[in-house]
Length: 129
Image 1 (cartoon, helix red, strand yellow):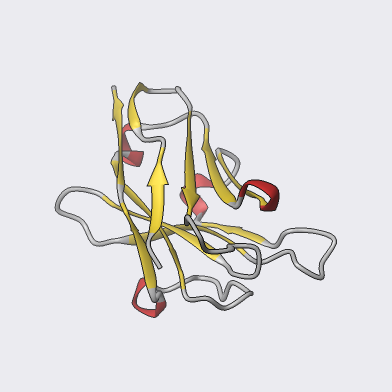
Image 2 (image 1 turned 45 degrees about the horizontal axis):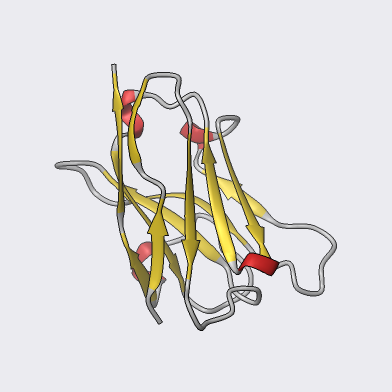
């Protein structure tokens, strides 16, 4: 299972980007998707998580404190895609962003990268000051 993350780029402080995560030939509906990031010289950290909404009327979403109110994670099952909308980006958000799953349904927050079974290639987000 190879997840694909895309949508990164270069933006100025205060700008926005939307990252996408999909898996060709694999249905994401039933699985949690975690977003992680790793800045140069720093350890990987979890950014957000969205649980499966199959059998539920709503999504369960989680965010690290530093992105609450700025980032929004969502999923479009029809498009088999999970999004991370990032607004009011700051230089400290600069990192390579990854999506991952452990093929379980519910996020156990904070999500641990060591517990993820499948990762996508990262997408670079650079926020200029």
